[in-house]
Structures are given as structure tokens and as C-alpha cells.
Image 1 (cartoon, rainbow, N blue to C red):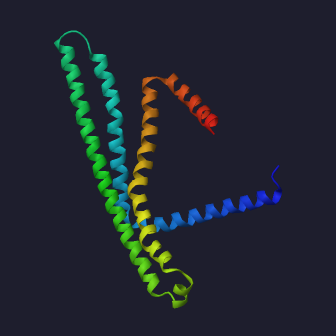
Image 2 (image 1 turned 120 degrees about the vertical axis):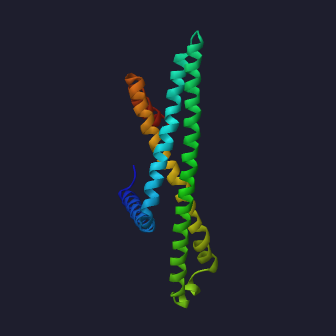
Image 3 (image 1 turned 90 degrees about the horizontal axis):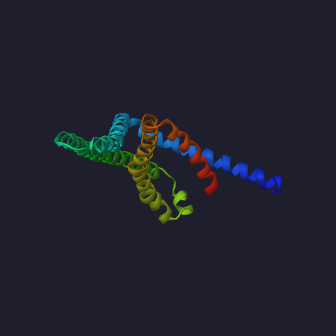
Length: 196
């Protein structure tokens, strides 16, 4: 059994980490809030691209169902294949546009962060540099800021696409087979519980 003191320390550490994370996210939002148009555009591009990619398997199902004897069946299959190709190309185009928008957003945020850091460093007293190693200061100016920029460019894309894919797949399953959803709803929690 865990002693009460250890539990209290663990709870305090968790609360401190949550408060620190919340403060970091608030600061990051201050930098992102000036680029709301880019964020909305990125969201719309992500939604559109992912919905187009989710429509491709649906069309492939229609193409398989259309297979049969006669030239009319092959013409219908060919029509679905062309639609699939068009949707795949459009989905790739939207993904490319999304990457472009997020890279420009991350560059703008990184530029503003670096300027703010530089402005802040110029007004710091000399005693700060006596008590902090030069390597640590340079690491914050270069590596940490670059990490934030890379996270904006990649992590936001992955989070949005994963969220939209899960919701879209759930909706598609509703249309295809409602009992299949029950299997997924039961099996995923069991899988998570078993693997943990």
C-alpha cells in the first residue's frame, strides 16, 4: 500500500504539471490567435481532404458491386474508378495545401517568438547571464523555438486528420452496418483494457 505522503506528493506533482501545461498552451494560443484566418483555412482543408479520402473506399465498394457481365457493367465500374482517382488526387492536393498553410503559420509564429525572445534578452540584467549558461540560452532561442514550429506544422495536421478520420469512419459504418458499430464499441475498450 502506498503511504499517504507519497500519494500527496504524486497528486501535487500531477497538478503542477497540469498547471504548467495549461500555462504553456495559453502562451502558445496568444501567438496563434493572431492567425485565426490561417487556422480556420487549415481546419477546412483538413476536413475536406480527409472526407475526400474517406469517400474513396465507399466508391470502391460501389465499383465492386457494379462488376458483372456486359459492357454496361464495365462502363459503370470504369466510371467509379475515374471518380476514385479524381477524389484521391483532390485529397492529395488538399493535403499539400494544408501542409503549406501550416508551414507558413509555423514560420510566422516562430518569427514572432524569436523576436519576443530577443527583445526580452536585451533588457535582462547581466546577472542573468552570470547565473545561466550560454548554451542553455542559445538552446531556448534555437532548438526549443524550432520544436514549437515543427509541432505546429506536423502535430496539428496529425491531430486533425486522426480526429476527422475516426469521426468519418464512424459515420460511414453507420451507413454500411449499424451492428458493426456495436462490435467496434465493445472491442476497442476491451483491447485498450487488455493492452494496458
